[in-house]
Image (cartoon, rainbow, N blue to C red; front, side, top):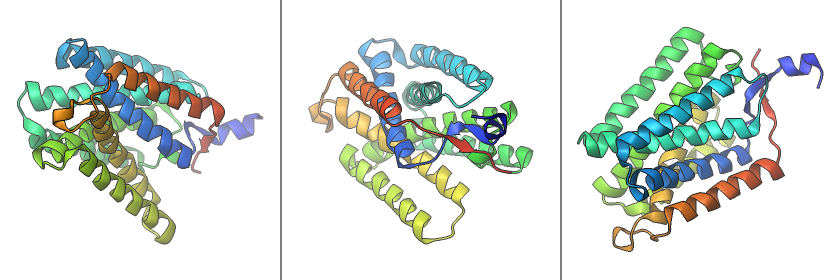
Length: 252
């Protein structure tokens, strides 16, 4: 790749069907791995959040310092946002007793605020604009809020609204399908559709993760959190290495 080609590429992947498949797997992994540390290892939500937050910070710093798009590093950072999002949302909802409704509302406000400040500062929230450390920082903070919101939103639909894990998965999957139809049949802003889909994949992954590892009497399959996490990790690794991703092109 020559220097001119490098200058036209971003450090985030091209948005393809493969991107969304890996993203859903990553969000599901975030749920099972987060629960494995906080519940199965009995470390609690606060300690687990501190651990995953440290991993998240290290991953983001490495991602920002990277000179080009590195698929493994990018997806490690995404998984870091999903795990810290899982334990942080559970800590707010359960340990601080904000509740699923209050937690989801608070996190939605923080997510919208992050997008608003990003747009006011940089003029756009398009992922194609990610070409400098400042924009990358907005990108990862926004993603972290979206992942945390997704956990709270998934718990809210499955538990507070009594829709169960499969019922909630059907709703979020249906909404994602509608966004896909809108992408191919309408002229709705592609930036809006991307962020709407990105946000919705998190609660979908959250309820799928809960379905895998929650007890039978809670509507789950009662699988080992560690085993489920390992399978999801292997699946992600296979997708990343068997189907190489290209970096997205920068907007000009």
